Amino acid sequence: MDFSLDARSEDFRQRIKQFVERELIPLEQDPASYDEHENIAPALLKTTQEKARKEGLWALQMPQDVGGQGLNIVGMAACYEEMNRSIFGPVVFNSAAPDDGNMMVLYKVGTEQQKARWLQPIVDGEVKSAFVMTEPAPGCGSDPSMTQTTATRDGDNWVIHGHKHYITGAGIASHFILMARTSDDTRKGLTAFLFHKDDPGWEIIRRIPIMGPEEHGGHCELKFNGLVIPDENRLMNVGDGLKVTQIRLGTARLTHCMRWLGLAKRSMEIATAYVAERESFGVRLADREGVQWLLGEAAMDIQIGRLLTMHAAWKLDQGSFAKKEVSMAKVAVADTLHKAVDTAIQLCGARGYSKDTPLEWIYRYARQARLVDGASEVHKMVFSKNLLADGADFWSWG
Picture 1 (cartoon, rainbow, N blue to C red):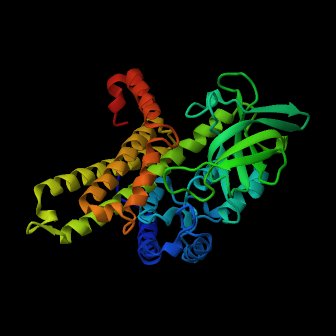
Picture 2 (picture 1 turned 120 degrees about the vertical axis):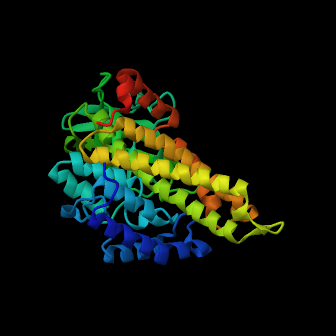
């Protein structure tokens, strides 16, 4: 593959880089910029989103016919990386999880009527959304086939009963994509449905406290006690729920990698600026061999992550599901983000551990990377199966 960006993608990348540097990074130093969950405050978010929209930097991942910019996945990779040099970045451009993945799957598989009702308001920034899959044990986590929540047919409707948790963004979402069991078939037993926050028969039990800073809407526990969903709000065919998850999660997992690389690079920027000036025992930290080793290893790992991510993005653009490539990128970049920010904190000492830089924010956020959208161990199982099946062809250039 050719790692150079086309002119249009490079133009967007440069403009996003400038926007982040000019509009977002300065906000991180002001405590008033944050809400109670350590994300950008709602009023400030609205203001910065309007600026991004006016500059034509809105919803880059969405096709132009619905109000996006129509970048391919390779272009997205370069631009998302620039967005998340700021901890506030992705949501400002309407490119943050879970809306990002929900928009992409709704555009790919929704009917025209579903796109108008459920997708367009998300693209326009009028509502937020959530993907409702994960359940308490013995329900599904990384394995959707363990889903316990049921959808029972009742004429032209489906009646939902069940229990979900760690549903990202649910606290402020209006549009939901729900995974529920419609039969005991191993491969065709799940179906995806759409519902609105005002529909009766469900409730948010609690917003689950977590270790790190949160996306808007948090991570919530939900109960379904007879939610009625019209059949017209079924996404794809009955039994296609697993297919919906695969379509959504493939690209969505990779967009996490794109964004995490931006945070990893920002961590290194903070560290390199500090060690270039700080002296200890008469020697600048940047001139010490041990410091150079730490910086060099982190920089190398970030570049490896970028190459894996770009390769997976390219494969997706060619029409491949790229399961192996996405899983490898997900494992490598999750580890890299943690290593980069841990290295940066170590090099910055007490300053890195304090709230004088965003490093401690990124550090707490980074720990979830090895868990979200499939634990690293699950992804290693995915590409190890490819190795066992393909043998030496695992490393094919094709």
